[in-house]
Amino acid sequence: MSGKYLTIAEIAERWICSKDYVRKLIISGQLSGTKLGGWKVRQDELLRYEKAREKADMEALRQQRIGFIPGA
Image 1 (cartoon, one colour):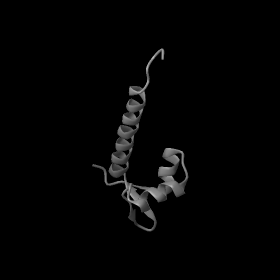
Image 2: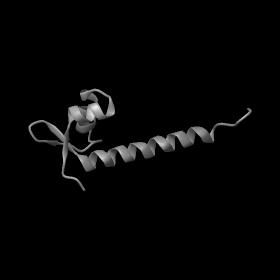
Image 3: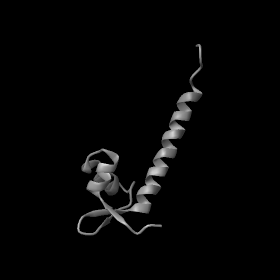
Image 4: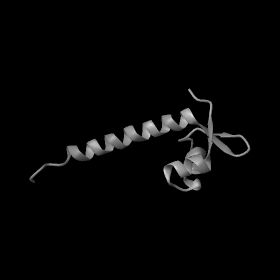
């Protein structure tokens, strides 16, 4: 995949969140980053994380819908 790196600021802008949140994900190991004059994340790693989050969110939504009984 792509060897392009994104900065914490670029990711925060993409996700519309704080830089501290992105930094927290990297430090906790949920998002793989490298220190290259500051934290950087490979574009393919970012896409992997986003896809995994989307899958988890869809599963949570599915679980919520299973408990929903129309007309009850």
